[in-house]
Image (cartoon, rainbow, N blue to C red; front, top):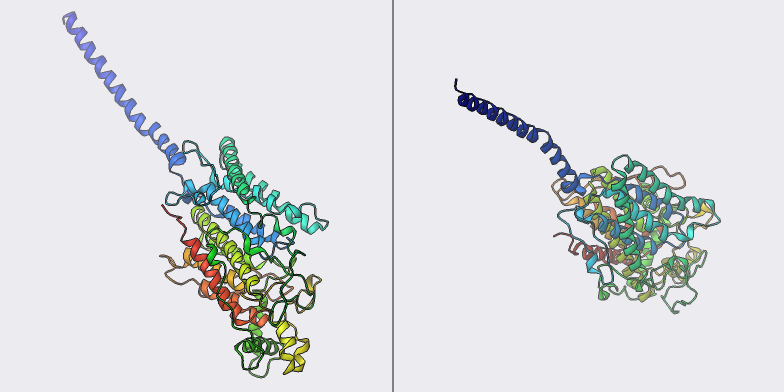
Length: 500
């Protein structure tokens, strides 16, 4: 064979070898490196808040509930206000990882929230963990050096919760990503807190919940301190606190029933219902024992009035939300939206409720019953509510130290019920119905905390509201209008532009 032909054949063989080798390389590239690259893309770019669970929210809100139980000066207004800022900050930490949602921080003048770098990877639960830790320490500073060790131990839960979750996340992501995520969470929280500081009526109001500068108006039908402790008015200026969604012209509810002392007057009828209901609960006649027992149970079940005994009435809705997200196994995106909406709505409801309370200054049932109804029913002169604080060293027959109308419990119940319905009740999984058991107080022995079953969130909110009548602390009109105020606050929060 000519030399040239040999060279040609050799070149052909070499060419074929090269082609085969290159083809093998391409095949290997497609099978191995590209597959690895796709995983990286999934993890860095495509992983969203929907890929994480709700548990960072559950942990922190359980911590909040444990702290709130002992937080002096936090009930009723500062608690939901803190929940508003906590929920907003956490939402802004993770919103860039919720493809269908948008930030709402730009709705508020003066808020300058940093944005996550789209070119960097974050571990989103860690950002939320850092945000909650940063803000919780600043919202409860008065508990850190309290002489009562129970209170200081409650404050210590903040660091314990952060450390627990930090350790967990350190096993699930790299140190670099964890550090970046926590730094981002603190930056967002710092920006939200800087804005919180500009709300003078609300900032640190828990340090002076019963200001001596306030003197209630006097005259027939106006609120005055109530027995047995005759405490000063709580948070008379709370109506000046910043709102997140309600307008200024929405902060005063419709007027109450006209005051009257004649037994045929509508106002007298409202008081007579409270008087008769509580008396029947105390001494049920034949045939009404079961009704009376259920009324007492509902009244005590929803109370949450007593410091050191339970969390306060507004965070009760957070306790229910915690149960719901666990039952639904919510992802991080759903949890972020739910806790943000609940916190903002509860905060706004509190502002409108307290603005209305101190606009109308309606006296409590116990005052009216003792002063007016005792003229017809002499035994009413020493009438008491059934609100009992004796298990924590307080008195029996208490009444919260602020005007009756509208009812705070009712507002928070109506508000929370509407938020829960919008998030969990009207969807493909629960088309207009949601049966749940409220386990908030199932292990308590100091009072009747046996779980109660509800067939909708609205039903739970209404029972919360009207439970104040058998407790003896509210008129029916307080409950009816309180529900209206709370539902309006929830509606305005739901109308914010959450979606893109």
